[in-house]
Amino acid sequence: MNSSSFTIIRQVLTLPVIVIAMGYFVDIYDLILFGVVRVASLSELGLKADEITAWGSTILNMQMGGMLIGGILWGILGDKKGRLSVLFASIVLYSVANFLNAFVTNVEQYAALRFIAGIGLAGELGAGVTLVAEILPKHLRGYGVMSIASFGVLGVVAANLVAEHFAWRNAYMFGGILGFTLLILRLKVRESGMFEHNLSENIKRGDFFALFTHKRLLGKYLKAIAIGIPLWFVVGVLVMFSPEFAKALEITGDISAGTALMYCYIGLAIGDFASGYLSQKLKSRKNAFTLFLLLSSLSVVWYYTLHGATPSEFYWACFALGIFCGYWALFITMAAEQFGTNIRATVATTAPNFVRGAVVPITLSFISLKANYGILGAGAIVGAVCFTLAAVALYYTHETFHKDLDYIEV
Image (tube, rainbow, N blue to C red; front, side):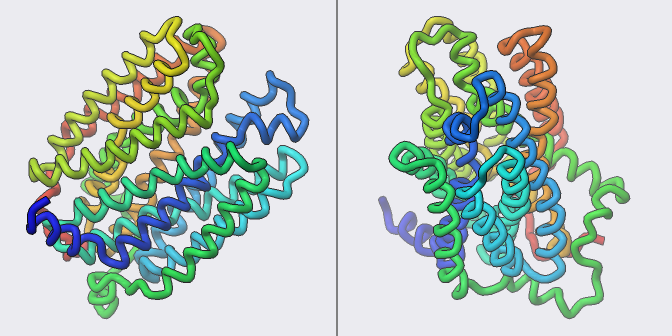
């Protein structure tokens, strides 16, 4: 590694980047934990095998529905009151909810707490990315977001390891404790200079509805959301329901959803690093994203060819799905870079949560189509729609690599 690489590392790995990366690690741990302990927790609560898939989908949709609401709430607050206010308030909410998840006695309580946790989880990434994008120089901000996402997605590895060695209730308690511990570190992080500079100006900040009433903003916003949807089809359907897919594909052994998620998220960590690094080297977010979207679609095709494969081969396919869907950091960076500082946190927080929230219609469509087309056919139809929407949106998205972010949307 040469001296210029060490210089970049020193400039990028500042305290805010490190603390926000740790926050995203906790966020991902708590976000994915239900998927890891879904079968064990619902079985202990008295559900039969045929009820676990249905209630699992319902609880997941409650969590993602909470993230839709939270995304709007925290996004507006981040532009009106500051990025740090969101980073503090959101982590308190989801840490409390996750800690209380350890004490549920029925599925109704479980669903309600996952909904509340979802609201809290919605604020972490968008506010963190906005803060980092505004404090780092434009030629380094891609590296900053790349670092956050690459480290953060490893939270699923921690979730799987904790769930393997401890009871599912203890895993939820651990997540809550992690969140409260992180609050101490956040006390030393400063607010964005761009945000503070614009506080004195008479401008409208955090106007969420402007994204729908202004034609130009609406077009950018819808495209920013659409390009990220395939990632959550892969994670929310192909990997989350991997035991069911493995059965349909006649995999020769048992498949654990937690292990499949771990392989996928290790791949996501690698992919987030690779796609972010590639965008910096190409000096183009759009070209890097296009390549990864193409490779992601090919990895889904490979997943579907695994009839009669071994569990090891299946897990490697989940790993490949993760690598080539590892454009989450790139997606968030592109969303943040397309909008002015008076509405940037709103976009950077709501866009990823609308993408995550897209799991609700995606899984509902998947479950609905499964009755007529089977699990493989339903997955293929839903996946084709998701990837087509993303490809069209990406084609019409403008390049943002060299864009100066210190401006106001009017």
